[in-house]
Amino acid sequence: MTGHGERVGGLWLEVTGAGEPVVLLHGAGMDSRLWDGVVPELAGRHTVIRYDARGLGRSDQPTGPYLDVDDLRTVLDHVRVDRAALVGLSMGGETALDFALAEPGRVASLALVGTSVSGWDWPRTPELAAYDRARGDGAADLLATLELEIWAGLGNGPPGGALIERMVVDNARRRVGAEAYALFPAEDALPRLATIAVPTLVLWGEHDHPEIAVIARRLLVEMPGATGEPVPDADHYLPLRTPDHLTEQLLRHLA
Image 1 (cartoon, rainbow, N blue to C red):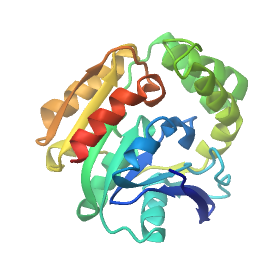
Image 2: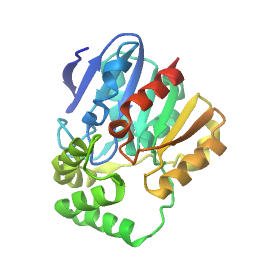
Image 3: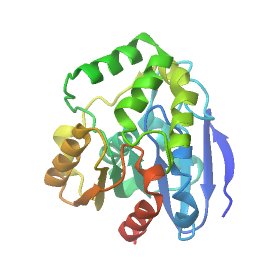
Image 4: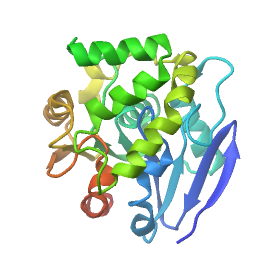
């Protein structure tokens, strides 16, 4: 099933299929190609909306401060969707949580895949410290190398490895430029998780960075509508590692 690409406010987006709307939100340093293996079957039952976050993929580089939550609102308004299910990976999951707190009436459900959450105190391990330095210094080539070493634990082989590597390399330089302008919500989601009551699916890869599992279990404990489990044979790029398994889980959750 073929979607159509369009633009709004400097953001590239694609709408595919028909039915109850679902928005797919990718992570930092990625783009909407992350969902290539999920969209076709999901669009058989739903209107699937995916877009490239500002400064990544086919979206424009920011020229001033921006909020990812505002960009999600812009996309929903553009496609005339009042309420949607949100599926977010990593940074995309963080955006979905922040949006659910800012606009609770517009979120039907959440699926959080290898997610981060605003307000999380990440451990200062040597690898994560080097990763943060590369981001702060604008060292795009080093950032891409560290991104793959830390988050692509299953390497660059199939399934999905070639596209993962291509996405990360394609976006590394654009990412460091965009993040210099990024703003964040005034209040973190972490202390307010218990107030998010929509049905929530929490998934994480068994080969992801270990802190992702710690975050996932915290969500399962604190969010009243949350259920979930680890996924074998997947790292941080779960939609490209196990697309069939993820699609099956999402269809069940969305039903």
